[in-house]
Length: 425
Image (cartoon, rainbow, N blue to C red; front, side):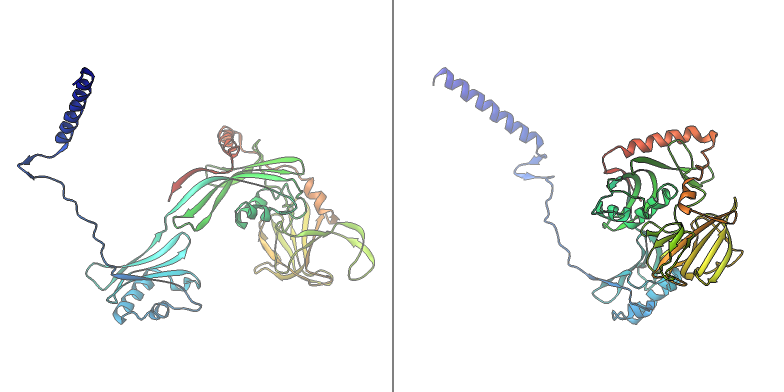
């Protein structure tokens, strides 16, 4: 054997010895050929199913007994379950189309029952141990709330805020929230332009099974409209009340809303001292703005005030007028219906429902005629709204807290459109 071969054999022997020693050190103590404390390895045992889960939806006009009875449950089980459900839930609030589940053992007994009250809550009834009775309770369904950045654009394919948000994978609720925030600055009926864009920060809740639950309040938003950039931030006061303010801390709530409708309708006829009437076929003053909208669309008060008239007028059909401070009075004509409780003397708040769009009176199609008087004289509503002063600012004592929160939120908004943080509920 050459010296080189002897070195290789020696190194190989040392490696084998070291490996055997390492293995020996990791083995449990043993006596002879029997290992006394070797871990026992048992194969997984698959237990047979002992129940079926029945999933169904509440039918129209259902009672709890009728809904559960169609599943051929034993009478004693059915009686005990109905008693538990009706004792812990107002069955008048049972909604057709909502999902319920029954976990039923193969011997016919019920293990549990669950009815989904809404996306966030469920009524659960579980069999008590060793008893035929059930324990029922309303529980919160697990969900994850995530703060997200949402962005979008207005263009030919998505000319409205609702269509733009739908394209971004969001829902109408968020479009309504955006319209409310900027209602004093942007006319979402006719003021959106191709190329407009927006970004916002909002909390979004999703259940563990992937079902969308809802949005929290929009925390901050930025809207580029016709070349101007508008910003809004939600700020809560120590008493719990909250409002939206621009980046300098001035309230975005104006004396008047931009329009008495949401953002879908369009202006079909503007304020004019002489306009050809579409029904009478002669020129006369058009003392307001006509908004094309479908029959039944909600009409709201543009500002706080007191109802001065609610009834029928010859040309305007069903009409509501609201008297405001500073000598203003607004009017809403051609309504298909006047909202319940809207009578002369009724106090209404900004955004309160007054009635529904219709075609009553002298109207060639369903629309809302919105008029505005100042000190008894008709004025152009659009121009008047634009001339109103900005809102009240955040009090000086809270300005530092406002600035700090604003900086945090708008820094978050500059991040790419994605989830920013999450927490389980």
